[in-house]
Length: 123
Picture 1 (cartoon, rainbow, N blue to C red):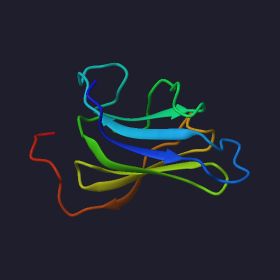
Picture 2 (tube, helix red, strand yellow; picture 1 turned 180 degrees about the horizontal axis):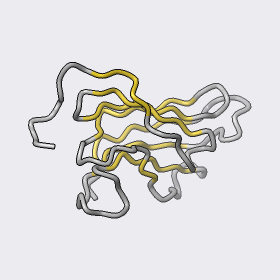
Picture 3 (cartoon, rainbow, N blue to C red; picture 1 turned 60 degrees about the vertical axis):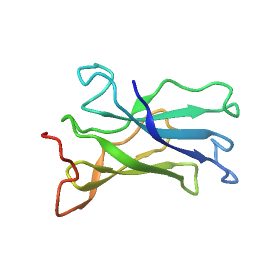
Picture 4 (spheres, helix red, strand yellow; picture 1 turned 180 degrees about the vertical axis):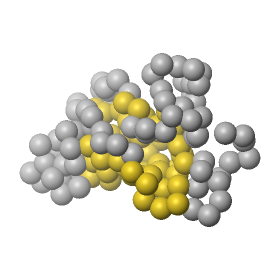
């Protein structure tokens, strides 16, 4: 793929079962027909050893169309949960979370619908 717009978050929460974990979220632009993605990819990778090794990427977006997810952000909650938010090309702000250190993610949830699409590309 072609990773872009990477944002790193570190779990520094005292008492978190995942304390010290690194999480990297990024947009990825591989072949749109890739079985590894639904539409364009919004991926998260995890390291539990200070960045020496990383997990396989997890596509956290449910968007099935070729709608680029971008401008993503990660933050860590008070119990080690991971929260992700991003824009998509339909002008929506989307949200997903992981409760197991980034291994699995809940469904993408619409937070806010913007008034215009953010893409010059046909979708």
